[in-house]
Image 1 (cartoon, one colour):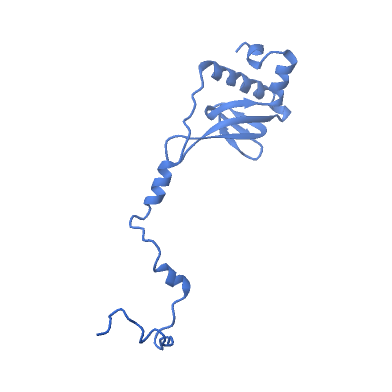
Image 2: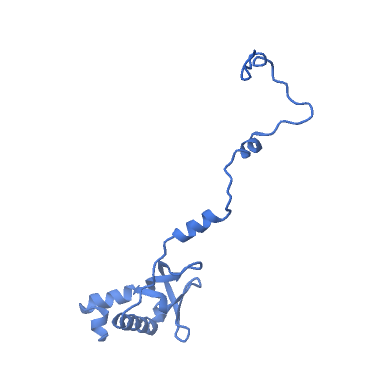
Amino acid sequence: MKNIEDYSDIIDLPYRPSKNHTPMDRLNRAAQFAPFAALTGFGEAINETGRLVDEKIELSASEVEELNGKLRFLGENLEKNQRVSLVYFVPDERKKGGEYRFFGGTLKKIREVEGELVFDGGTVINVSDILKLSSPELDALDDLTGKSFEEETGE
């Protein structure tokens, strides 16, 4: 009796393509063996949950006073087209927290009522999101007096 797994009678026969069906291209054939994602979107949800965000740092009362003093100085000297560098918080759109970004530009306007700084190019940054603020004028004042801006203004 012949073994069922013995293909010796057909193993050397030539391949004959089907006359009724065109051969499947390699990409579609490979797709048949791709892994199946039973929970679509689950991988993205896990990645989003694992994405790290920073907590917003709340400034102390003295740090707020220092920042306000610097903003007053900059506001009084707007005509000088001052270059300002700052670190500010950007809230995340999808989860609690956000990230800190650096920005440098020429200060054009301070909107006191809205609490916003307007820069060349139209960038607007909310004052309440600012962590650190500096400019060459503020640094020059420190160098000139030998005191920090806070010591000079009494803030």
